[in-house]
Image (tube, rainbow, N blue to C red):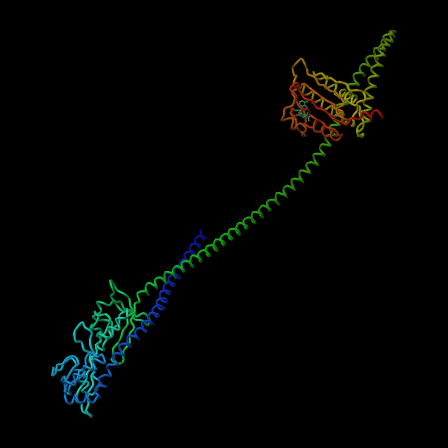
Length: 601
Ligand code: ADP
């Protein structure tokens, strides 16, 4: 939340700075470009002003010196003294024609007209209009006077000088100049030009409608106000708005005072293009600023994006690092736990192996117990027979019935023979425990097992079929251990058969046999027609302590021990696949064939 906020703030700040910079650039461009343009126009205006002022000055200068020069001519002095009107008129007309003056007048010392180049009027009363100039001349100065004869027409200017005879003023000579000639010269200038008299009246101008208008002395408020807009000072330049065809235009006013007359000449230079040019310059500057802003924006944005990406990557790397650290810690713990479990498992396995060894030992003892029970049964029966036959023989001998006594003695002998057989077996049994694996004849081992199990077999209703193998069939094994395995398989088969055939007349069959199979193997097979073994039980049948029998009836150790023994003998104990045509189960003991070795020994 705080990150986008910060970013937004940055963006707003950058935009604000850019806007301010843009505004400043626009303002500065406007100021500078206006200044440059106005300076340039000002220069041109100043040049034009000099030219126009010079035009005015040169014209007026020329006529300024005309009356004093004429006043020095002797014929003019004579005319003045003699008041020779004819001569005066002639000279005036010639001089006016030669100099281009509008009019030349000769006046008497009292100011009355003698003659004029304009008219032949002799004795015309003195025009009041030029009195000021005549008076100044009579006072000995250069007479000057502006003369507006017809309103709306260009004005005239009078220069007058006293005519002296020695030190006495005998007359006055005056020259009238038509200011319209200046206006004609100024008419060539495109922009307005004006000359203001000392009293602020427009005397000469190339704009006829301005002529004669009275301005305030400071030139700001005037009759021209209806024509002129407001004036304003821009730097060193005075700007004026003037009417133009169909509107108003901005002008730069340049003015200077013409010393000869004390007039102020002003030139108005068209500055309307300045606004347009300034606007263009500002537009260009703003566009450039916008462009620069865009560039800055792109750079800043890219920079911000790279920063954000870097920050994200750094955060992701940190997260990853933390996860790896956590995972490593978990793994280390799991490893430690696994190590612990492995150690426990190894200890349990050692314990199991030890227990199994003990159980093998116990099973051996159990076999011995079964065997001694069987032995006592096997011995007791013949002993009882021997005893009764001996008693019988004794009684028969006392009665002299030797023949019959002999019969009893033969029976005794048969019994003794049987006991001897048992004893031989027992001898063999006693000799075998602890002996090394070697060639063991399969037939006798099965015989012994069956004999040891005979009480169990007799107790059951089942039939045991022993298919005797070939005589020399031998395996590499330990006879006692093999016998133990076979006994275990037979007991399980009997249990299964009993279970399946309980309460039936047919007590079921257990088959045992042995034969050579494959290359160098002998297989002892124990089959029964019991209930068989389902798939689930199959998977666990060799597990220690797995039993389906009731408590006390089985420990679930038989098959696991048998399997261990067979594997130690280098063979395999296998529960064969169930077949639909064959009910019950088949266990096979596969051991190396040792028939050849047996034959040698
Ligand atoms: P125990 O006989 O003490 O139960 P075993 O390891 O000898 O232990 O046998 C384990 C189990 O295998 C028996 O409980 C029984 O369910 C099953 N079993 C072994 N042999 C057979 C067989 N021939 N027919 C059916 N089940 C059998």
